Image (cartoon, rainbow, N blue to C red):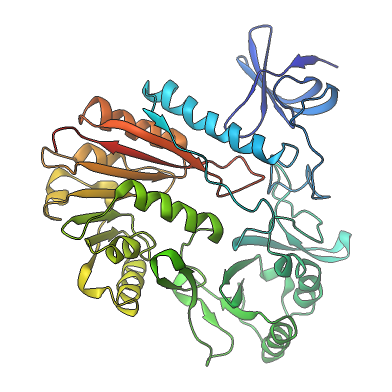
Length: 434
């Protein structure tokens, strides 16, 4: 069996080695380890492999807490000590900025981190009828597979959600069409948890009664989604249609529906909000845009500072929710929200927003390349960019610095997804002369 000396971790948390001029990406291996590996995909310039045996272990290696680690595809870094995970993600960000944009931030921000377990308040779990395994399986997909992992718990889910994985099996098995319910979406708010069942066939009265009884027994709200996102509704028609989370530091309470986009980690979201406001430094006399604003997660704390905010988002439903949240928090007069496709932003469309003193951008994984290219001479003096993809952040940073005259003054990571290779980051861009 081939042996390799691991040099580094890649952006997916795999150990990287080089053998005979070829890069080898080894799942489960850590820097400075000597390992045996088995390749499952071979290409002319690289191979992908799994760890077979550790010959010399890293001091950063730890025993995974979850008994399903290595089978379930939900986590890839449980074998890495928690502080080492944070350091590795910081290096991923720095490497992306340098190799893709030839940029180094003037200063690195201290990493934002919090609870390593039981943090995931939003998740989507698969449901599959597997007669060979005795019935219905409920959980995440197996690594590199469409199969559902046979798991009875999950260490990154809140404990009360992890405890439902086994009871959900007989619930779904007893429904009229257990093979036509492929997933359950979980949304945890403050004081309330919702389970949204994707039902491909209508439920019978007996199905609904069974599900409502399950919800009452386990203190969760039972919802269904018979069609597209607009069809999500509670089984109990008299139930309140929204959950909420709070940002106590900014005296903000955010209402959301179970299928709205929200951050999965409420602890890190609060710390990220503090960091973003420190970098943005909104002032009462300023006008600030929040692009990709969602339901107002950043908009409302900006408005609470006294600044005026214009939030832009592609989803009309989220824009309506953002406006509602602004009104409920007494911030309606300081906020305006617009629906626009920011992936097609142009200098003309940005100009319709009016003069902006500062800008916050929080795009999806695709980044905000159209927005940064559309910035003109009157562009804001300060941009705070929150990113869930270091590669697209680096690409957009290259435009901001090399073409638009900004400096990358601060950058750092927020460990939004502990035990995984996902890298959330935040960066500050500033223009001189203001």
